[in-house]
Structure formats: structure tokens, C-alpha cells
Length: 351
Image 1 (cartoon, one colour):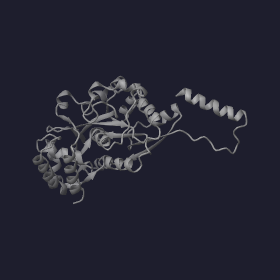
Image 2 (spheres, rainbow, N blue to C red):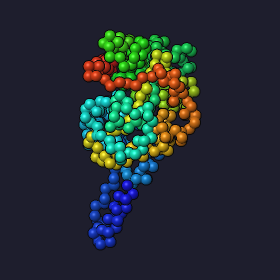
Image 3 (cartoon, helix red, strand yellow):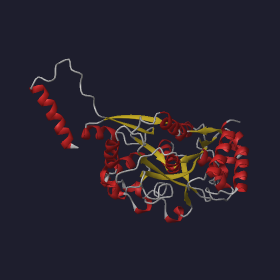
């Protein structure tokens, strides 16, 4: 990278020296890297530090849902260099042939990824995705309003809290909670289980303030318009800093363990630069700075030496073994189940 910059500088110097560049000549276009991510999903200085070190202008665009992200990739296949995608979305993008294969030689810091995050169901060969952050989807409750002892998924079906409850605007996450509340695996494919989950969600629908993105749920919990909601653990912990009445719970019925990943779209304008960026994110100090800011766990095992001790010891971020036994990774969806979940979601989102 430094060699390429040095050669570029010498080329410009030579042209100026021999009179090859006039004052009116069009300036050389800055190198750019287009990133598509959730809002606020890096540390405040992550991109700025990358720009300074590598001389690359980062253009960050954000999405509010993975449906929006997928639509963006399909409508503008040559726009983005790096995208953040959930485990289930990686599988979807692979099925749609929208991902480029990674070159491990260009990303030597892949060696920092913990063994438990290699060979996961959505990318068993680690050919298309690099684990970034991981966490759980559990229950955020305001103990000032929610009765003591109500810390299971059934809270989100309690009519006493009507209008003050929310679910994420994610079809698979929503369906998973209904399945868990019924005592089933969140990966159940049985038609009778899915039918029961659909009915349970239809019963819940009138009680909800809405199916909301995580930032809207955070705002609702802070303002106390929401008293209980399905939420990602890092977001719930951020709310708790502003409002000590908020607590995060992984219900006894279980919860989802998710992994967000860095991927490169097949039509990425600069695949080489994208891999340089991914390798940069995998530096232990860089990954740790992101964790220390976001309060999400990292798949980067080498980063743990730089992570604040209170984060590593917080069971809401790094769950105990007993809690881990109640968590499930999402398994890739077969086409029939995917269509069924989509039909359920359309019915819920368009009452």
C-alpha cells in the first residue's frame, strides 16, 4: 500500500517537473471506498483513522433494515465495496450470487478470528464472509413499569402493557420470538409450529406500538413510551446507561445468537481496497475500540487483550456457558420456510 502511494507521488512529481501538468489540468480523483452499514455501527474514529492511514476517502451509507440493504445491492450492484450483513442475510446473498469470494492472502488478520466463529452454518468454508460483531436478541424491560418476575417472552403478549410494547422490524427475528415463546426451536421448520407462531403473532399485533428498527426502539425506551421490547443486547445496554430502570434479559425459553459479518458484493468497484479495509478492521486494537464503544462482543479473539475488563465480564455481552446453552444460531432457511415467513411478515406488517 505504501509502495503504491509512493509511486503515485513520484509520477505526479515527474509530470510537474517536466511541465506535463498545467494549472488547469483536471485533478486526480481521490480513491474512494463505499461502505453500506447500520447507522452508528463503527467506533466514532474507525473510518477517520482508516482514511488518514491509507489515503482513502470513505463514503458511508446506512440502512434501517436488511430488506433495504438487499434492495440497495440489487438495484445498484456496482456501488458498494463493503457491506455489513447478518448471518441469515449472508446466506440469502450467497443464494442470489451477490457476493464475491474473499482472498485470504489479502486478509492476513483473518487469523485473529476465534475458532468458534469459523465454519458457521451460513458460510461453512468462510469463503464469503468475515465475522465482525456478535450478540444476542433478547428482551429489554423497564422495571418501573413491568411487574417483577415478568422477564420471559410472554411479557410481549401482556395486554396490561398495550401500546408500550415493540418488536423489531425483522421477519425472522419476530417469528423466532413466537416460536420460542411456544417452547419450540427458533429454527423449527414444522408446519404446525409455524402455523401456531403465526397465530400467536396475530394475537400480539394489537398490543404493539409497532415493528420498529432498533434505533426507534432505543428512543422509545429512553423516552419511556416503550416499557418492553425485543432488542439487540448492545442497544439495550446503551439505553440502560441513560435509564437505569432498563434491564436486558435473555429469557429462559432461549434467544437468538447472531453474527454480523463484513462481505464484499460481487460487483464491488474496488475489491482490493475492500479487503485492505477488512484487514484493518481485524486489527486487535481496531476491533477492541469498536467493542469498547458499542458494547457488542467481537469475533476477533486477539482483540480481547484490548477490551475493557468490565465488558468482558458483563454476562449481557459475553454470556456465561449456561446462558450460551440456551442460545441458537439461525440456520439457513429452505425456500418453503422462507416463503412462509415472508407471508407471515406481510400479513403482520400490513394488517
